[in-house]
Image (cartoon, rainbow, N blue to C red):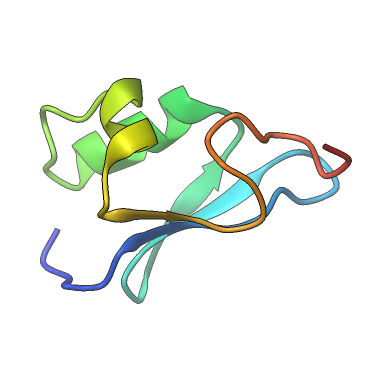
Length: 73
């Protein structure tokens, strides 16, 4: 991760998937916290886990926090 910008997890789509970006780089569609963890590990953040995602200031959750995986709440 070379970006100074936050990791952004966008609001859930109709299928519950959330786009994940690291700066300008699209990392993938996540359908749960473990997907986000895996994307970030592939980016070189070896020690990332779901607890880190929940509390890190480097992560910007849009349209709901880490427990929101449905477009309908």
